[in-house]
Length: 308
Image (cartoon, one colour):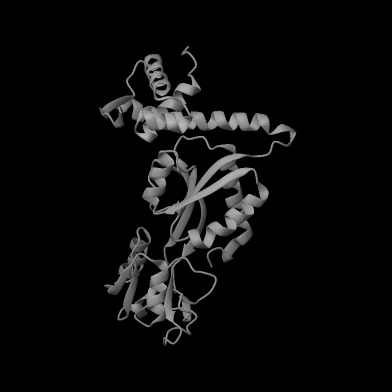
């Protein structure tokens, strides 16, 4: 049987790996530089492996063994903190502790505010924060411990992540309110063949939206492309082209106040799936598991109105 790990040594190792120097790690932990160095060396002796190498007087680098240990060390320290908080919670068993939630950039403005507000009302002792960005950045944040779980575009999530499907949306065509097609109740994709496209140029949405056109035998006539969802809407509002999008704000106005018209696409179109994800094999903390359940309940309550 292996001897139990010293949590203080693990904390010093994690702080040194993340801070880059023993001095910075000491400042973070309110310990002396020598105390951090001694703790890391003691952990290396216990494990029989070198975890950090000094590249220069000012920089530490992880060895392969250190890189393998770091995610597990972060997880173990988080769980130890969770155990302490649960012990202090008393009979109520209130969920407490830090929680950082990630969200895919496009849907974050539509989904996160309501989720954060309602979760905070249920679990006020949770120290809730969020990150928003593209899926690769969210995955990196989850791997290095800056984020506990994320709501992400399932098309872009790697096999390193567990996935729990939340909801799916369907693409629609967006026109300026005075466009001749704006009054239609639905439109066939083939009718867009001669139209100029304002492309929402953010993967993986870009690939899905272009596939809708190419599957219909259409060579897209791209007039402008942008990774900004609101700029796409603004350009369409000015009559510079149409757009295909999957998420839809509660109002059909641009930032300038110009009216827009969202028209469903006729016939079967690919679904755009969004899912909760977290590193494969990782154990969710109590607060992360509570947020996941809250997300599922929120989706069930919203039903078809979720993201319009």
